Amino acid sequence: MTITRSEIHQLVDPKTYAIVPEFTLSERLEEIRNKKVGLIDDSKENAKELLEEFSSLLNEKYAISCQLYHEKPAAGKPTEPAIIEKIAKECDFAIVAIGS
Image 1 (cartoon, helix red, strand yellow):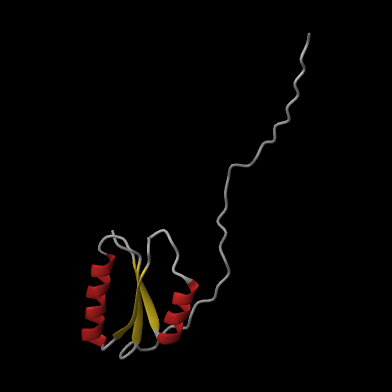
Image 2: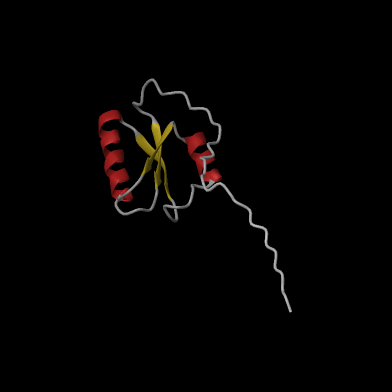
């Protein structure tokens, strides 16, 4: 008895390419004095402390107030679109802290 087995193999290209979405940059602020900042904490170690210190320095030097503070549930998760919209509506600019 003879058993004949036929298999087809497909070769694939192992390279990957970045998929970069199109976007437009926001206009730069001419002045930051008395502006409102939104802060996004990425939940990594020391991110909160970094933002608190930076916010304090901006307030002392430029009278910038922290309008909104958001802590992401995990560093690997994106900030929810509703939070981004809220920051865009209520703040003049935003800072994202990446802890160590």
